[in-house]
Every structure is written in structure tokens, then in C-alpha cells.
Length: 63
Image (cartoon, rainbow, N blue to C red; front, side, top):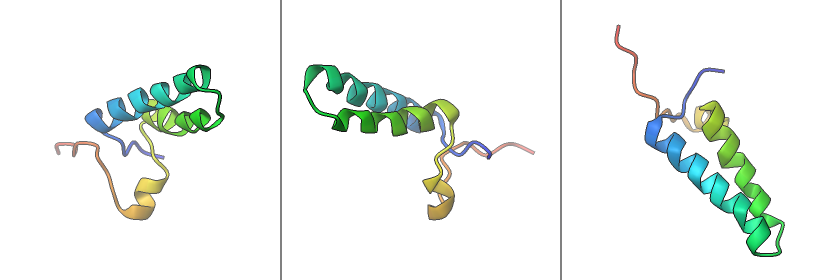
């Protein structure tokens, strides 16, 4: 499991995840818990869907 979520993508995932989770307390709905997915993928810098789609937003390592 190598990192495949880069800088801006990672920050956006964390912010969106926190916003969605905070909606649980502002609006009485359970859909805000969907925010756990982008939050966790942002924190761990790994998205399980990216390898399936052939995506990688991490910068390339210099040799």
C-alpha cells in the first residue's frame, strides 16, 4: 500500500471530510458520515479506487 494521494488532493480530501462530518451536527442526517471516507483517504494518503482507475496524484520521486 504505497501513497497515491498527493498534496492538494490530500488537503481537499481532509477539508471535505471534516465539512461533511460536521454536517452531522448541523443538519439531522446520517449522510454526513460519508465524510469519513475522504478524511481517512486523505490522512493515510492512499485511495483504494486510484489503482483501479490508474490514477496517482503523488509527485514522482527523483532518481
